[in-house]
Image (cartoon, rainbow, N blue to C red; front, side, top):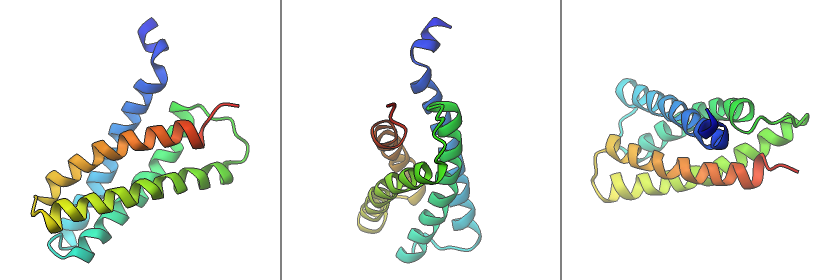
Length: 135
């Protein structure tokens, strides 16, 4: 328990990150299996954006409550900063997906898993330094 308390924020972030990744991947896979074709560049990106919206909404509330334990009464401003930070990593996500899938010909599902790891690390850094920073 002492080790958990020492690394609580990082452990909780990783747990929430895994759950957020599950949300993102599930929504992405539902999109490409049911109504979007990942072999068409615009539809690939549409699936990516839809999965991003679902994942970021989930991530904001879980990070606020369980990871950073924010008490900020101005949730609107905080959520705005959170979405802005996530927009930056969405751009990274979309660029890497384009390079790996459209340019590199890598399987979209494998590329999506790789991208999720990169995005998770970048999101923690941005959340810690910009969104939920302690005063």
